[in-house]
Amino acid sequence: MPEKITGDHLVKAIAPGVKIYAAVTTALAEEGRRRHDASPLAAAALGRTMTGALLLAGSLKNKEALTLQITGNGPLGKVVADATPEGAVRGYVTFPRVELPLKDTGKLDVGGGIGEGLITLTRFTGLKEPVRGSAELISGEIAEDITNYLYVSEQTPSSVGLGVLVGTDRKVAAAGGFLLQPMPDATEEILTQLEANLKTLPPVSSLINDGADARGIIATLLKGFDVEYLTTTTLSFRCQCSKRRVEDVLMSLGEADLASLAADGQAEVSCHFCGEKYQFNGEELAALLAVSRKLRSRTDGTPSETDGKE
Image (cartoon, rainbow, N blue to C red; front, top):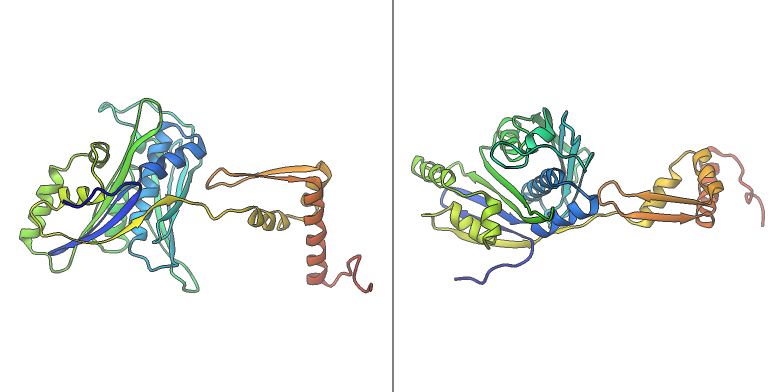
């Protein structure tokens, strides 16, 4: 029996007529909840979306990326996640503190929080224009919506399972998911066995909470199959923001807005994706304003204060 994989990870595997990706995302889902101070409902929606994005990114090449966006008319607003095949993900919910009554089953009403709308998947593959597709949401529960999107928009039959278990302390106790796709050579016997296994599969968050790693999820899903485990990728919540990038955003403001901030003597900018806050004092803002003015003068031909001086 192989040693259990610890930490957040994604495992790829194949079996006759089948390919499957499975992931454990407990720590990164909790990190997203913590950074956005999310309610249990928002934490579940964000954790499912980030996990789904990572599973979909598993088919990309290195240095590529994708954005998964769930846009509904429910009280959560948009749920967005960026992911790379190297295992990095970040995400946010427009209104992360929304609460709703539990469903009759005692589960979080993610579908009610999302509402009706669209699922959009954008792949950044190095081409001049990103590849984008969308489909209507069918439940707002996210896993079913990804399954439907793959079938309707990309003609790829799939089965997607996503789960986030939030504890009584409002922290994420277990999170993960799987993406299973029959191959073109899958026989009727293989499809029948897969369907039977899916019907008896416990909630994926329950499997993880009981100690299963991604290989354990795959072994349960593909019971009776000869499984070949391929690669394991470490996963983490990781944002590309930095103070330098925020400086570029500030300099893209109109001169009047940047001058107003400099006059105020301070500014705080918060990253939408990770909640990181960046502080700027008056001296830093004045320096950015000076650089911005110089760059604009070079662009429009207007002399700056230093042009023509030795």
